[in-house]
Image (cartoon, helix red, strand yellow):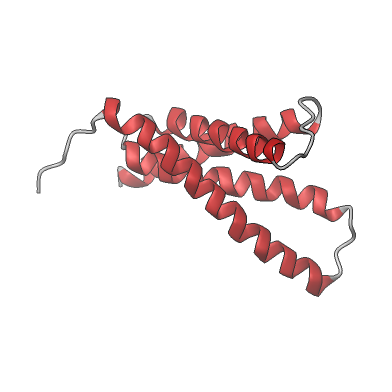
Length: 131
């Protein structure tokens, strides 16, 4: 079976969008799972703040993994950009819903974590493909 050479020009936008959509879907699933967990375990209300960081990291990781799978090359760059697109989509959706997005403090930390974990997901996918 012959390996297909990746087409970087056409797949880049597609990889970013599909990766960001996969990250959004993963965040919805994780939000539902963690909300059920919080109802069952009686987690303090302050715990939701930290759980949101965990959800963003895991969702960006999944999105970076999927984006790198579509792109088939440049895993770290693809994953990091998917993480950035994902967190910007969250800000746009939140702004459209009427929430005020504070661009300093915790939001910058969420952007950083999203980019880092998206890049890690892309790197992991590239390393799994080579084995």
